[in-house]
Amino acid sequence: MSSVKGLPLRHLPFIVFLLPLFLVVSPVAHSADPIVTIRESSVAEVLSPYRLPVSFYTFEPDDYWAEPVDSWWMSFSNWVIRQERLHGSTVQEIGAWADQTLSGSKEALPNNESYLRLGFAAESEYSDPAQFKPEMRFRLDIPTTKKKLRLVIESESDELIPLSERERDRQLTEPERTETDTTGALRFLTDVGDAINLSMDIGGRLRLPPEAFWRLQAGKGWQAANLWGINVRQRIYYYHTSGWGARSWLGVDRPVWNGWHFYSSAELEWVHRDTRFEAAQIFSLSKRLNSRSVISPRIGVLGKSQPTWRTSSYFADVTWRYRVYEDWLFAELIPALEFPREESFRDQASVIFRIEMYFTGTIERD
Image (cartoon, rainbow, N blue to C red; front, side, top):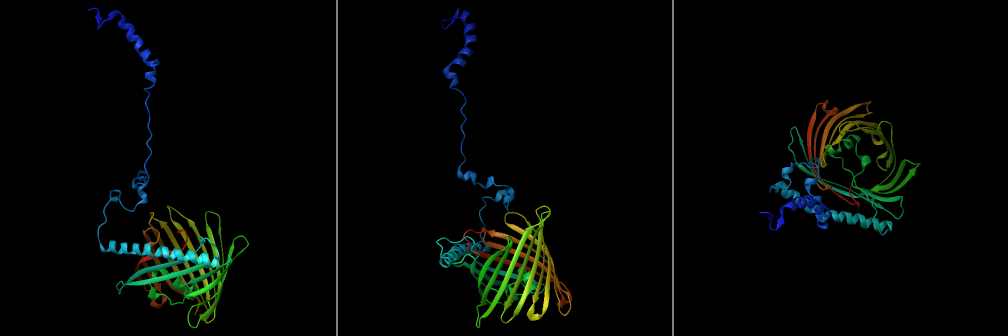
């Protein structure tokens, strides 16, 4: 046998030698280069929960697609969500309408500070069971035709609330707070120099008979060395029936370690109707635990100048605030201890649980 299918065997070595060279120079060989295809990710893949870091979530990865369990809490939370969707836009529209109407502008101003807070709070003490009490606060902050003049309507008079109560406000439920009347005022805003913000309010308590009041506020803040922030505020006010008063506040803060932030504030207030000074010194820390919750422990000392300078009470509390839904529904848990002089400094313990809905009239929420 001298050939394979007619091919002389003596030519076979030449064919084997030339075959690789033929494949290299052949156009067909060039067309066989590998083709790399890049596939673009879909929107669903880009926004997938698996793309976010685990620290973003407050639940385990296995619970991403878990079905909700029917409960009274789910029914209540769904009802609350429906209320925000029904009424939240109304609050925003009222704020935008008031901006456009009173400022004479076709555009709603982005610095509107109107809000409506609705909530329920329950307080449990040593001998008293927890009972939910409704709470409501509001502010209507409207610019007028003048850029430096605003109309401000608030649900309470801050100056008529005792200093000790203002410092412990989140520890109290609505029945424990001092009853004040809604106020309305024209606020004139200006700047002194490059950093001092000055405002003056002239208005009245909206009641029968009405009561006129006047107040002047000034504030300044700056950054000092070693990451310290310093803020100073001064307020002087006069109420027709309660007389005049003055309040000085100094606050310092700085980041400390591992995400914690330190705050210290000192306040001194002159109460003319009682002819005495009231003072408060507060130290607190704050840390964001995750995207939904913040914890803030505090300790404080309260004092008065009558009959002599002395401590009126000590207190300590821890506020755990949790964002339940989006940026308007929050829950708070506040265990607290107070040592008042009236009780011979015996401890008075309490735990506050609060659900709060925050309807804001701002154009873009924080």
